[in-house]
Length: 171
Image (cartoon, rainbow, N blue to C red; front, side, top):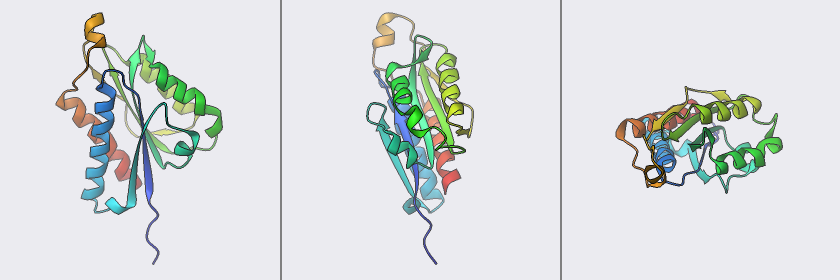
């Protein structure tokens, strides 16, 4: 009997203050924990790619995707939007039905970035596995917005759960 082919979870992230990177790292840990729990760690590759480095080939090679980024000025951060713009047509109609998740860090709301990412993912015909999670950092002053962030345990756990869910669906 042939072994099951390895599955790939691609996690694309961008962060300037560390919040979205912490969400991405927690998702990696959650995916790896789920694979261990299912005794399938040899069946899962978790690829962590910065939005600037992620390419169409990474998306095409992934069985599931997780996008982690900040909301800036009521939309996706520039680097996350550029990632989607750069790769959109190269993978259009080639990702249909693949599962995805979305994690957003925001100073207050986050819903603008969620709506924007969800519309892009709908265009790629990806299948959401859970509602997007927004980690609200409550940063409202210029100093607080620009300062390094530390994501709280509830948001880390939500990110780990999203990574674990995506891994479990693949395994």
